[in-house]
Image 1 (spheres, rainbow, N blue to C red):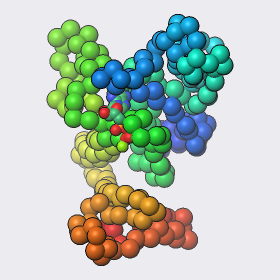
Image 2: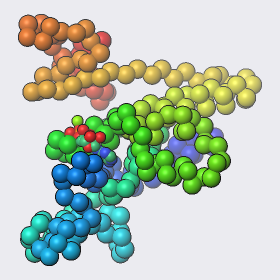
Image 3: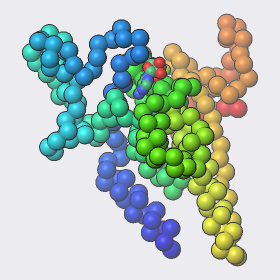
Image 4: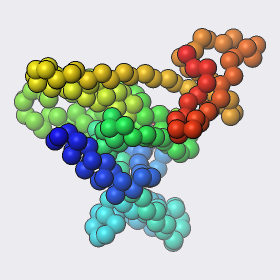
Length: 238
Ligand code: ADP
Ligand code: MG
């Protein structure tokens, strides 16, 4: 009963937040220092910040202001939420985890990143192999307290995809544990399947499929199909 109410309320909140949400994430300047700093030096006198986030007022946390170098005019862009350059992978996932919950509740969810090359799409989705220093600093403030669960053991820079998958399996385990405690309850059956495709020049490539000898063009042709019930599938995936 409580679970049904929880599900209804959670998804009502998600709908109220908007079924389409656009977030902006500011990438920190790269370490090699070739790029201009984002926190200063962009304005005509070199004192105005190139990029600033609204921190107060109605648009706090939702507006980014861009002042092109040498220009007098600044441009404002509004989003459902803006993540600053100091936002950690965990901060971004906190927002996305609500959508993973909706998917677990049976809703269709799509999350994608959009932006020019080098803007941080892959980093946001997958993460990189290195530690995320900001998040490590977060942890060190716990002053020797043990890190919660596996957080301390896994790479904190891991992105939305590994975190979403962790959440899905954690939910499955929690449901199984709850059923085990409540003797007589039927353990939930949750089947997880995954596919991974790449769309390149409008062609769909099954990344988990058999490796194709690239130049021979002997790849299976995949198509996107929508059935009457609104289910969308890609044909011929492994
Ligand atoms: P894209 O996939 O959009 O082309 P990447 O995700 O590969 O861009 O990002 C380009 C570079 O910037 C990578 O070296 C990546 O690790 C780094 N990077 C991107 N976003 C961040 C971030 N938020 N924090 C730290 N490094 C980042
Ligand atoms: Mg990329």
